[in-house]
Length: 550
Image 1 (cartoon, rainbow, N blue to C red):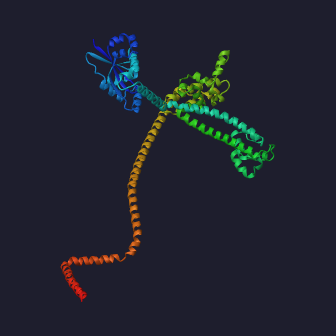
Image 2 (cartoon, one colour):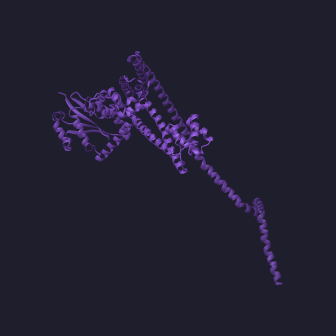
Image 3 (cartoon, one colour):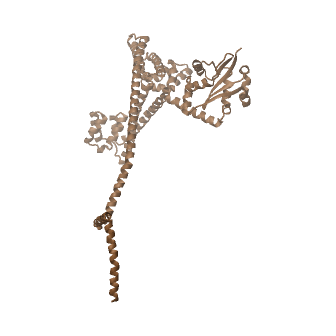
């Protein structure tokens, strides 16, 4: 019999741990005893012992390893750890590695040839290791392990939400809900400004029907008595009709409205500004919703429209949940109250929900509305699945599905047979391949351009830093030169009066130099003259003494 040794791999937030399970056969036979020994540390240490522990280098390294484990990919760090620490199987012993996940076990078995196990006693042993891990590894405390788990969990969830493309449908849900709320608010505010301004100019309500245009006209006219013919051009630009502008001028001259104070006009003008700003924001929000729908669900947007498609996604909760719904659920989505009411009263169930707002059901006849809604729900479910699970989003399938719905409408009206679904899908698949290839080429070109720009910016940054260093090196030299010039100028200015006073000093210095040079050239003559002077001096003294005696 070949003996079996079990090693268990445990992935912790602080690093990888490899544990050896003693008495593997006995442990495998007595699983209830293992469950009891999990809570007791001393009993668990007698069964499981730490072989090796490899800590992660940094938080980024830990996140990289945990991402690869969750995807079932063998990371280089784990590959090196198992190669160095896992014992090689011999002829008499068979080594088995216990793993918590079957995907990572299959990856280890493929690349390293180690037989892996994830059932039986392995989950209970991993549970015990998870409880006592901080006691089994030296230098690791319970608080530090909890901090590592918390930090890695936050970074892992943040990365999953950040890099998951399917989570962009949250922006669509929020924008469509805000769009519906803005429609309600703009309607109520525009009714309020109609009532408020009609006290002063009641005839304007009948002439201008649009709420946004009414707010702009009320802001432009202000006081109807001060409205002159010079303001007609601006009014025509707002109304976009010369006849309406003339009607407004005529009505302002013979209006039955009351006079209004300037303070009231100021408040009406401020409120009109708010209504106009809300309407402008509603337009920009709708453009944002269109761009998001074309990026996240292009096929659904091409088939049923951006607004109806966004309402379907928001009602379902996400694009993935909408893709999981069957066509029968998509057909009634939004009409749940009517459905349950019909089931309670045993009446007719609703034929359509949110799909009713599409143009196809409105164009169909009364007899064919249920049929076209069923067909449209089927195509919507296909489009949502394509958008959710396709790697390169394109609107090719959505355009072809829209053509199929149009052909079905014609078939209901005229009886012309539409194209078969297989033929349409074959053409759509070929076009989708071409479109995906073009999209990949564009992405590659963009990446190349970005790399070139980064290189150019880095080179420009290096040149600027070199220039800055040279200028910084030159600045102190120039400052020193300037200081020296200032000092010389100050000394010159201070020495000018002294030089004026002692203009003759250099001449005297020259004479002294000549004398010294002459003395150096004839030292003997100087000595003789000095001796003659010394000889003459005592004789003169004696003569003076004699004269004094006489």
